[in-house]
Image (cartoon, rainbow, N blue to C red; front, side, top):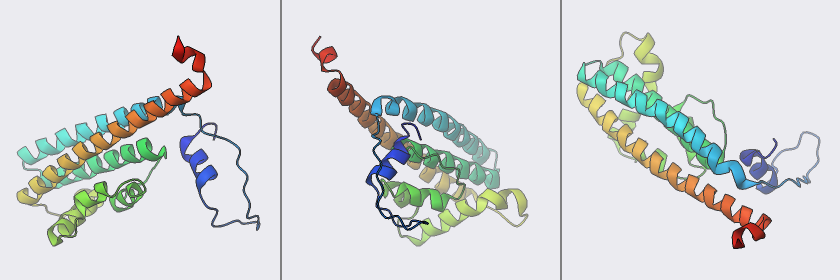
Length: 195
């Protein structure tokens, strides 16, 4: 837990809702030191988005070659990697969840925008999201799973917009983390700022 942004934030600001031994006071003196947060967030963002962009390129190729089931499976991977990047950059939490609905709900801790890209309330969005959810296993293991070309394109366009949104959100948060690091360094070492 040494200087872990997620755990220090939770332990120092969250409300204790359960204690197995009955202790209700929790003294956590550690403070997060933000000097490396932007660098770490950038590294995680770059790693996950390279994967997401690669899966997105593969999904497009699958549409062109009329492999629509594989396309939607690849789009599932794009959304999964993108959500993991969003969560890591915004919360500094390492998620190993594969369920897109759970990942998107976890993103709601910092923004409703990601989940609203897929679940806006329209019946067609619900239907498309169900196809995306089912693709993770059905594209590989169910002979009856079939995705139309139209649905492939609709999902491809929606996922492409989602990736663009996520990139903007992550870049903004990384910039905020860099600003926090700069302010922290100025506070800790004011002599270096005036020189």
